[in-house]
Amino acid sequence: MYFQLHKYFEALYYWKNAERLYPNNPYLRNYYLAYAADLKNRAALAFNRGRMDSAAINFNTLTLLEPANAEAYFNLGGAYFNEQRYTLAKRSWDKALQLKPDYVEVKRALAMIKPEMLGMNLGALKE
Image (tube, rainbow, N blue to C red; front, side):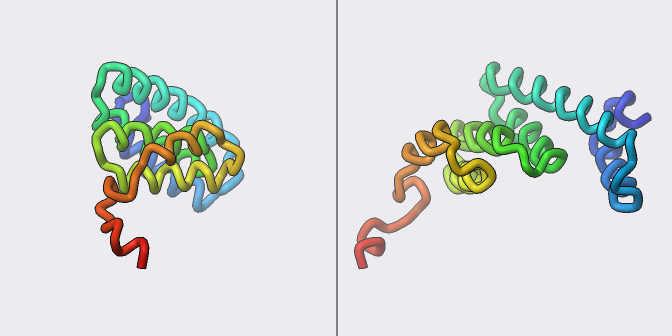
């Protein structure tokens, strides 16, 4: 009901509580699939419009819904990177790589983050 009313936070809250009480609930999987598709669409639309803040929120919610989705973490990292939130971008990309060690695009993206972008002192790295 909350999902149809576009009250996504409430819907996710109650779905996650239901999942905790009844992990094999056959309805939850369908709800999650519908919500995941909606989140992906909204995130991609926001990203393409340059709304990295909205894209990050939607991709982050997608990672809550699908914690094993490496692509969601990759895209979340891209939104953070474009917002110049490099520490969060690196954390997201590291998680994507943890989930999918052979993810070539993530390895390329991680190479774009330089130590100075993370606020690291290059002299301290040598010691």
